Image (cartoon, rainbow, N blue to C red):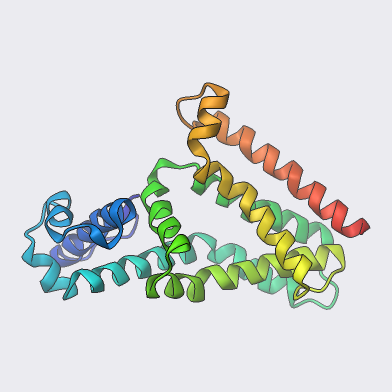
Length: 223
């Protein structure tokens, strides 16, 4: 994961970004059992810098959660804005709705097959299984709103109620197909004899996901 995509304006901001990058990696691997010493060492910072910039290990953990929420928000903000615009129309264009679903899911697929987001995924996976206040922060700020928008888009295309239990479950199942290539990464690499997800392989995965999206949209529309 590369925090340097955001311009760093000071030496202090650089140190904070290095600590957060290292902390997400350590917390993703060891949870709150990660030590501040190991985080500081990985960040090439003095251990006192954690107290100086964040106060405590627990506050650094929450800062990591906020960084992740901001990262997700930044990556999907254009899709959310397009969804809001489309859904505000009296009669949304179904072709545009389908294209946006494909675009957002395709972008998610690329992010979740990238090595740069592996530590981020480990952090969130730990929180999914043993949630803390950090997951509540990420969920409330980005996951719930994005899940809600995708439900609304699918419901709009298929003529369903976006708040219907089955619509929400179908939406979650669709997201699960994409997540399977992150959480089941090693399985598919071994099954296919691949060593990594390069651009060609990500393209193959994206095409399969796109096909499944259309199967789901068609099936729900018919149902």
